[in-house]
Length: 309
Image (cartoon, rainbow, N blue to C red; front, side):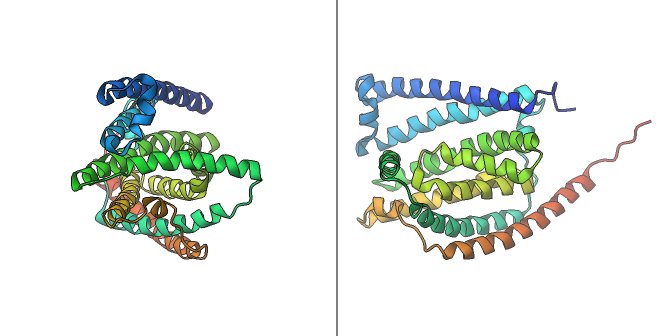
């Protein structure tokens, strides 16, 4: 038995939420403390200094460290508390097929089409003048942070950006949201779709971007379905990484051509394209489900048969 003494799912949720809260506080304090030393500024000047283009690499590294402490560490501690095999509980499974990997790559591009269309739909949602003003202010704060993090002046900057803006968030966020939160919500609600949707909403909300809210819910559901069908966190990490890496590469190319990075961030697709992306995703997920059942069957058949007297 890998499961430890059963902790109710509401308590598991509160426990994980509390650990994440503690991690966020510790991560923010460490980021501020290291920022004063690395940037040679006072504590209050750290946020402004991190938003300067010349400090982009330091900003990326500090944000990565803070996210590791806020997302990854709490997830590992939580998994250790509730299960005797924490890595297995979180979904770190090396059993996968090349066809699964190929399908995940195709799903990534289909998901980008759907997300682009939902970005346009998100902008068309009517808001009161007061709420629209608040949403734009929140979006500008998020965009400023993104623009600073996305500043790349050389190929070395690009490689570092891929590591800290694409790979690190893919690992940290998937461990927390799919490996931990999604598992709690599915078991708590006893419904996979409900658990995936709740996790996706939470995943989108934590990015604090109103105009990217629907696209990130879609991304969260795609990641959630990949993990649910395959029970392999590496595959959802792969999809998340590819999605982020494509954006980083796009921003690097735009900057190298002297074009507006802000316009590239704001790019959307016609709403009808979303139907194309959705249709592709349905077909691809059907194939992923079939392939994942084949992989699961091969794992079971390869296990030694034991008898109990």
